[in-house]
Amino acid sequence: MMRKTLALLAAGAVFAAGAAIATIIQPKPPAAIAATEIAMAHAPRIAPEPPHPSIAKVLDNADDLHLSDFQRQQLRALSSRVQSEAQALRQEIANLEARLERGFAENHIDPVRIDGLTTRIGQLEGRLRATRLMARLDTRALLLPEQLAQLGSLHRRDGDMPQAEADPLFDER
Image (tube, rainbow, N blue to C red; front, side, top):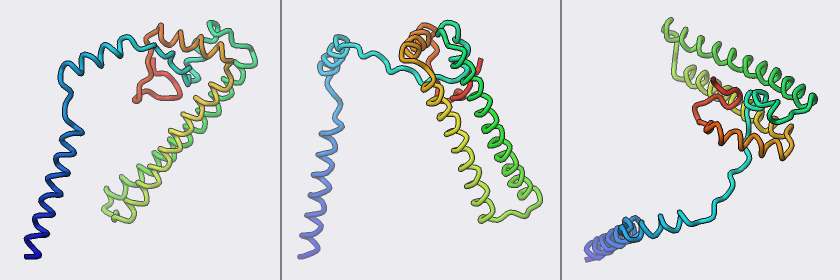
């Protein structure tokens, strides 16, 4: 008797959960979709956030942005420093990748070594990404608010929208 009661309670709970989920994910009827689209079309436009520009983008537009000599000098120094850091990280990653490949080629590889090498490679790739993204913050910090606004309008006018695959430090052209 106890088993039947528990089974009925469990079945009831599953049914109730399924009904709740169906209510939550139920598609909107076409009229509701149309009303949402109309409301969105008449919603006030929010100005996009100022960009987090790459060093290359700012230097490419240095004249249009009216960068001072100091800003240009600081951006070039930042570019040199970041390129140097990134190159060192890329070289370390390449060395670890070569050790990993050698281990497979020489048949001297085990799960512990694979885990250690790939973990270190992942950490270095994370540092490389952080270096590039920090360069964007440093670049932004060197610009005046009006230069950021101008860069944003140049950015929109060019139709040059940021892409996740693009190198966040230097624009690929």
